[in-house]
Length: 106
Image (cartoon, rainbow, N blue to C red; front, top):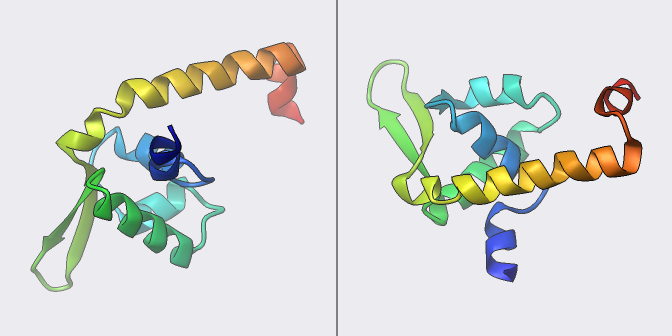
């Protein structure tokens, strides 16, 4: 369990994977979708996910160079796990805070 949490845990990796689930994204697109992440942290998290085989980095050799990220086939195996975490988180919010809309207004 520790290994799995190390791979997808932390503040940013699950958000990155959530946004990549809808398709390939460039770095600047991810920064717009996750506005609180710094460029340095985004790069670090993307490199770690790539090193672990969870995402692919696709380099298009053109002018200017273009780099995209997508979830790898291996990374897709995490989808049900992440969906379960998301579902549990929503249930936890409702249990602790009651009505979900009230929590989101805070």
